Image 1 (tube, rainbow, N blue to C red):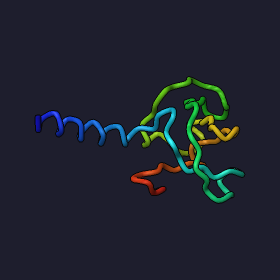
Image 2: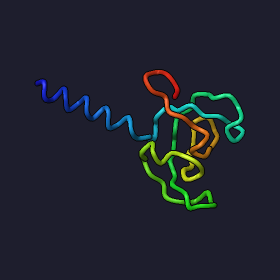
Image 3: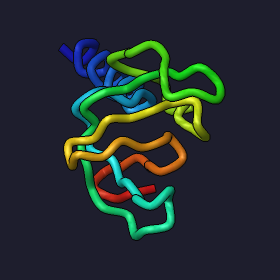
Image 4: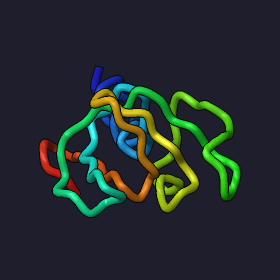
Length: 94
């Protein structure tokens, strides 16, 4: 039984490295100039450079969530670029 618990803990560590649709994040509106507010990710799009169009994906590694490479659809009626969000870990934003 211990092996299963260790595997479960390892899977949790792996999951934390990815952003998924349905995850809660801290989002700053006005191109990152407003105070951060909690929002839920409804959609993730890897975009072509210089555009807002690309491939929709259900998850992406946090290492790639930066700049204007990723477009996110949020549950608050807004969309944003990756640089406008940060992850929430253990109840705290980072």
